Length: 66
Image 1 (cartoon, one colour):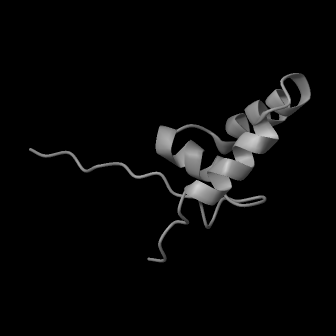
Image 2 (cartoon, one colour; image 1 turned 180 degrees about the vertical axis):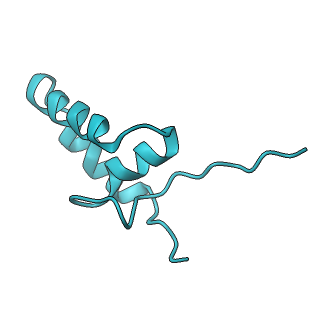
């Protein structure tokens, strides 16, 4: 039996800015709040997550309308 291929999309329904965190959470099947918290902590302590978020916002396609 063939398993369906998971695809990474920016979320249309669970979004605060561009849907990146919601899409990542759906792909990894975890709570989107955890992803958002990791991005904020990375922004405070590392400083590179804003740049990473912008890059992900550009390269990850938006979820198709169903």
